[in-house]
Image (cartoon, rainbow, N blue to C red; front, side):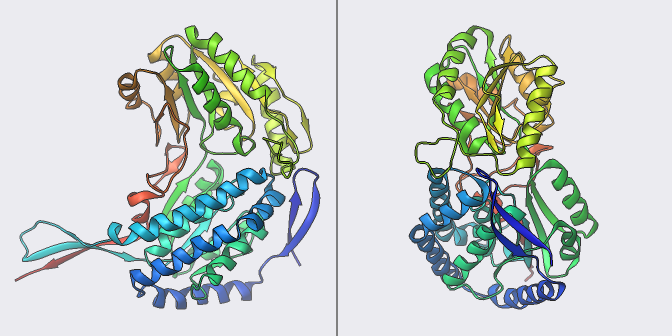
Length: 453
């Protein structure tokens, strides 16, 4: 029998094992999804709202238990884990309140007596999700797609099987029919088979650029819609007139939250030459206050990296960048999965700290001569997920925002995902959008109805 192991990153202790599904069990899940879809697609919005609000209530009632599981499986601090569960509940309520309006029929002017567009579900959506936000990433896709009448199949990361199964249990406890949301404990080799099944009509993936390219190719071969939310190397641009204290506070939070394991974490800090001294003083002060350690210790601000192989990769990227000219100003030490919050100076192109996604608590500082140079540096990346601009001149910042190649630009604010606005990237950061009005339409049949006299 094959098993996935749940390993507590802080100590590397094995906490649980999960047996992979047999072929028979998987096929039963697929058959159940098909049966459930035929009924679920016909349910009223009132019923979908009722059940989604039940989920929100359960998330809040069970918050601490789910936070514990997350922290144990992937190492985020308990405080961060609790906030993640609360965010999922908010998303459930947002779509419960807005989905029917988002999917309302829209009249379309034409030469017909009547013509309109309606939004119909398409089937099962296969979601391949990562470990870094193991609750939020799932609810980010599940809440809009279930409200739209689709059903969901979750292939979660192997190190968060307990979380994945807990999420399935929440939907069942809330009253969802069996088969509407299912967790599949499977390995990556099984993904092509699932994508080929007729009931699966959409694939959404959050993960690495490599994983996205592989799954997108499979989806394309099967002629099925896909949404890819991949890596990021977000630019954090600090102009001369920025509020340095506020910018540094947000810079610390953005780079170091979740131990730096976020696709939309600020990673490349592009600072005007004249602002460098003031910003760096405040930024270094903030990083020095952080405490890395046991995620269950309430005094700890930064938990461990989720897996040992990921911690080793980050250490290699850090050391390779130093060999190519970067200067380590803070941190740099690793013990197992415990990685000290770190700061690199003199970062430039052709080193991992600039060219690659650094998925951990390492901040890269890049000096810019002027605003045009800052935009050039920001866009000199194969990624284009999020970005931020810091300036007291908001009109100037908005003018610069149009030139940044990214799916989002936040001005004087922390880049974050939120159910109220669309989320996604450009270039190698992927395609398609999640959340908001735009996200719920990604896996709907946008159907034209033309009525003649």
